[in-house]
Amino acid sequence: METRTGRPPRLSRAQIAATARELIETHGVQALTMRRLATELGATPMAVYHHVRNKDELLLLVLDEAAAGMQRPELPGEPGERLVIASRAMHDTLARVPWIVEVLTSDDLFSPAALWYPETIIEAAMAGGLGLDEAVHAYRKIWYYTVGEILVHASAARRRTANAGKTFRERIFDDVDAAQFPRLAEVGERWAELTAMDTYEAGLRALVAGLLPTR
Image 1 (cartoon, helix red, strand yellow):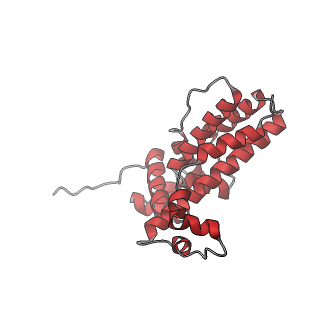
Image 2 (cartoon, rainbow, N blue to C red):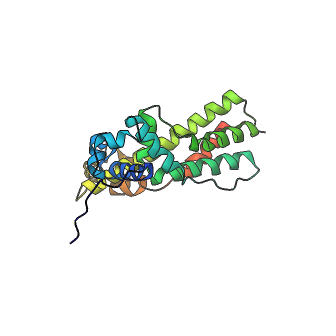
Image 3 (tube, rainbow, N blue to C red):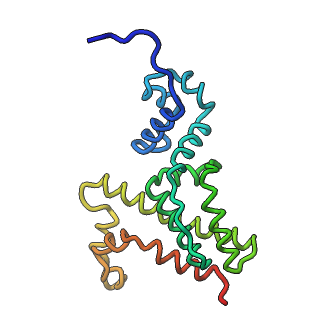
């Protein structure tokens, strides 16, 4: 076997971003450190610092790489439907990489490449009859709903993966006191199935209908 000599191959920003993203997706955002990333790359921390100055810049690099594959669907003319389509695209893009939501909600980091979503949603809200300030508030309400839905489903998926059998919550719903909680007892073991369903768009449409003024 030939032994390689000389300097190791130079790192690229694309290689750093890909390895950082793999670390995050496998072990979580908190596991990403410059030292651990360097170890995964087979390099020294100083070699990584040559490309990114700190963890925030590293996360921004990863966010930009992820945002490059975001959805930009064709948009209808009707403002309410435009709001729904753009918001659904935002949801579906983030749901594929839920760790991004954790980054976006825990710090002030944001990829400029993703500005298409708030711009499109705010513009559609204004076309639907809202002023600029109201449209921004409408976007924030949609954002909170979207983020909450993604985080809850991602957390539930992790619990299902971690538990070989039923989760604690599922066991509770299997044996709810029917005299005290008749509706929950009626749902019973179907609770996990019902709460795992994708009802995002139905909720989104109800939210949009409530946000836009009636004409």
